[in-house]
Image 1 (cartoon, rainbow over the protein chains, first blue to last red):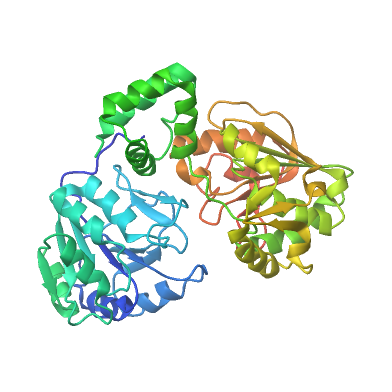
Image 2 (cartoon, helix red, strand yellow):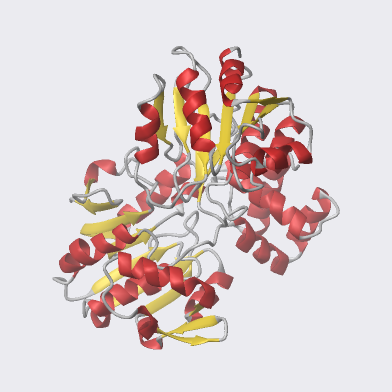
Length: 192
Length: 270
């Protein structure tokens, strides 16, 4: 296993969502600064077809570079990485990601819990987790794991979320640092 | 949560005890699976788990089964099977005898998928499908040809999307919650344990299929396994990988050309 550690300064933002989260993402990502330099991993529940429609849709709205992540890709500043359909994405100690086609979690692959938990372990206090709209409890447990590892977590305000179940579950399970509308999430990230 | 150092210690100890070396497996996925094995096995402490694994070979074999990923389905990635059917099998048909290796075959769904393709192309009788995995337990399931009935609808949809023209249900007999596949499909299959980390090449093939196994390995181990495949592939043979796997950064890339579409199939050009 990789022994090299992500440097102390290496930070990672993980964003997860399900039903209704694309609307929020289309507010957050375009509002990020042009020189935004923390790598972002986006884990959305989506269909299993491997078309790149989501990457195309998002890349038209942001100046940051965007790609569906491949196995062993290093997570680099200035990039937004999308979890591919039908694979879990796990950040590794050496700053790359592994893909994993194992069992679905909360009926989902990619699963937000899987990515966020692994990100929390690796990036610890430098992990910033954002959970958006959704109709599934995936992500709630991992939001707690992020806190436990010293990172920060933010949920989309359930009052604004198109489907409030996912952010609501995270809030019910354990305290979160911030509850913000999508525009507020962008402002928070820009201030990091 | 188990610390990374504890996992390194455990993996070193089991490698010495049993000869199964997991040190080249991707860390985060291995960590997650060992965490879940620890909880599932109701271990009282990490030390207790390690001690039991080192002293109870049957428990260790269960560990191997649990920490490796055995999720598979028939005709996964329909377009891949369409390409096999339309572009690769016609080339293999020109050989007097076809040898295929399914490396890391798990419970065998892909091997049966291949047998169905070969049967429909009238090539099954002159083919041999070698199916190997690190786990004896999953190979027993593969040999039985019995799969969960609950997966048949998905399998059937995949089959049709992959260009299948028959009625998929003619390939199996449904029984309670399971589906037993036509034994004639298995007649040309040979199942055997083989550890990609440690075991050598054992034959020469025209097609090697290894999908969604390399993703669990680190770059060094991936490179060693790809060299093993290179040694095991005839000139002009085909290597098929998973939809997110690639030869791109590997030492053998120079001797291979990707077939002319988006699928992860390469042809050896020497």
